[in-house]
Length: 131
Image (cartoon, rainbow, N blue to C red; front, top):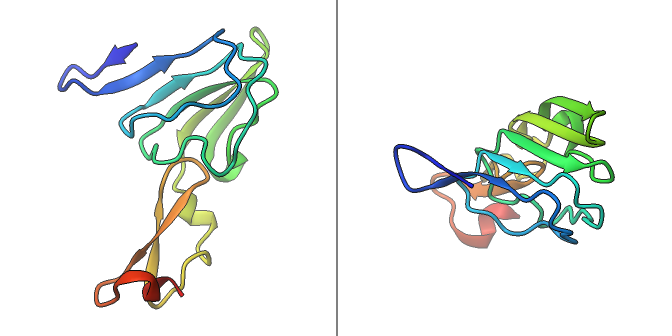
């Protein structure tokens, strides 16, 4: 749909009324996704919107709640005119999941709405930093 004027990165995509059953994988540079009017779309908490750290606006059909809810979005609006949700301004998922990573060996990094990544602190490597 829309590309950044500074680069060739896709920053917005309109997937309304495509009868999608699952959320497709997206490029990490996406800032806006519109999935309204996809009545058969079903959430998959483990994979939907993963890696989308700069996603700022997400429009979803009524049966699909904003991933992570108010912990992950600064504003959640129910749009009556189209029976959908607008999830706006993604909040760092690590703010509400600070105990998810071993505190002395790793740290939390947001990895898209309601997704985190535990990364090794300096001096720790491999799987041992995540124990």
